[in-house]
Image (cartoon, rainbow, N blue to C red; front, side, top):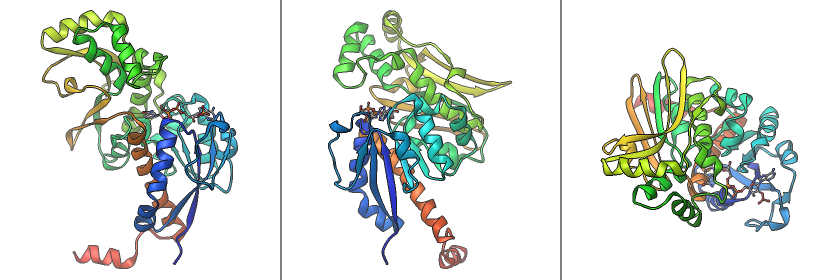
Length: 338
Ligand SMILES: NC(=O)c1ccc[n+]([C@@H]2O[C@H](COP(=O)([O-])OP(=O)(O)OC[C@H]3O[C@@H](n4cnc5c(N)ncnc54)[C@H](OP(=O)(O)O)[C@@H]3O)[C@@H](O)[C@H]2O)c1
């Protein structure tokens, strides 16, 4: 029997979009085997179509993201641009019933409509890659912990500032550390969003939205970032067995509190061990207790992994709904008998 073919539109073909397109191509056999479907990348939108290096011959390249998002022949939209205005494309895609996957924390964390959809567990909206790349934290909050009361979330969500702080505590100047971060590809030449804490605040807003089921925009996060004045306190903290890290924290007491700020952590605090692009998320839930995730929070392949997971979820539910069933009777009977 031939597998159904789902048509995919990709918006953005930079570090993440490119890695995802390659991963998709390499995953076709797994998609056929595990999901009994095929996915065809049919359209791509970027700002500069003339610069695109093509992996698969079949797709059309344009500079019209809204046209791709609203194309009724496209079943799945994957968006990885970083454009804060991408919420329009994402909402357009959702409104016409397409599975919509985004790695764009900037757009999501500033859109009450998208955050509202996430808070309500909209079945077509997925954004695992938007927070801490490969760490499966969004899906954990959405699915595994959906029945739980989340008490608090604490994390290190920005690799650039972790790298800078690790360098300055070793005696490098802030400027030297920033230069090294740019050369290593960890920081943009213009790293304002990382240093100001805006990047971590956007990720925290998405996590809080999932955890407390209410739209939290990044403007609701109290933010203090890092600049060259952090170098001396970071060195002193290190000499005293502590580590300054840019910590993002959300908790609920009389109201929802959200903070991103540099904090001196005890050296034995698990978050203090984080270096480089590693991200860390720790949460407390009423029944589960304390849970922690550590892993690569940036990079093309790391984020492609998260997007691929979202894609598999989207394909599975699309195939199930077009078949009109989610499980064969035999599988249900076997489970009961076991
Ligand atoms: N890089 C990471 O490690 C990482 C990790 C997790 C999440 N993310 C998120 O993933 C997204 C993409 O990041 P990236 O690092 O891949 O960025 P990038 O390398 O700068 O690539 C951005 C891509 O989006 C396209 N684009 C930007 N604005 C556009 C617009 N208005 N219309 C059409 N295309 C547009 C660019 O087109 P041109 O090539 O023509 O300029 C480019 O192909 C961001 O939201 C980022 O926060 C990134």
